[in-house]
Length: 58
Image 1 (tube, rainbow, N blue to C red):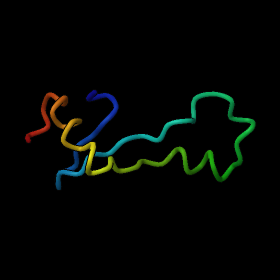
Image 2 (cartoon, rainbow, N blue to C red; image 1 turned 90 degrees about the vertical axis):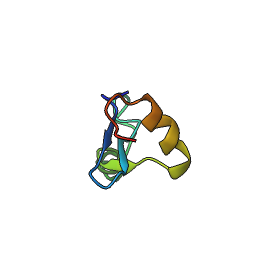
Image 3 (cartoon, rainbow, N blue to C red; image 1 turned 90 degrees about the horizontal axis):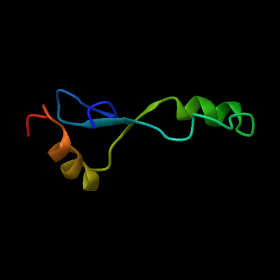
């Protein structure tokens, strides 16, 4: 889990977006560019993710 998520100093959980591994020629430049950005984890999922991270400082 710690490879996929990062906890910021303010307690937000960051994740990478899915869908940028293969079959990229069917996707537009704009879509591929936006898939490369980092996104925030939804508040509903945050508690479950933090429970599985080893050093999340809950």
